[in-house]
Image (tube, rainbow, N blue to C red):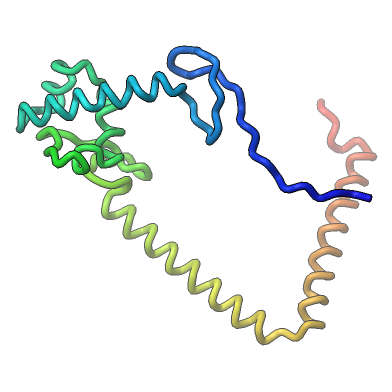
Length: 172
């Protein structure tokens, strides 16, 4: 008799990517709690500097706080400055996740956002058409279509097995 046990997400033991210390990662964390706390404290220092020095440039913030551009980009992308009611540095931009064009907020530039919106809309329209077509099909037609797909898959697999046994896939 087989038992179906619920899947349990067990914690994983990892080395912190920053300090190398061993820690238990419950939700896929890459850095330990100590490093997370240090990072948050460092981010608070950056926010405090920008709050105390409004109109600072990115270079001034980096020089004064020791923060690197990658960290400041992540902070902007995560909305830390807007959440803290602090203006971003004057020349602060970071790359769009899709095309790399410099942006000042969000994850994607307006062109990529528009393109993604259009792609999503077209995909939704295709799904609606498929749903309507599926509703028109009888149960027997659906079973026939599934059987045909399975037959095609099995045919491909047997062809691959035949070619493999003939030696067609051997390394030269």
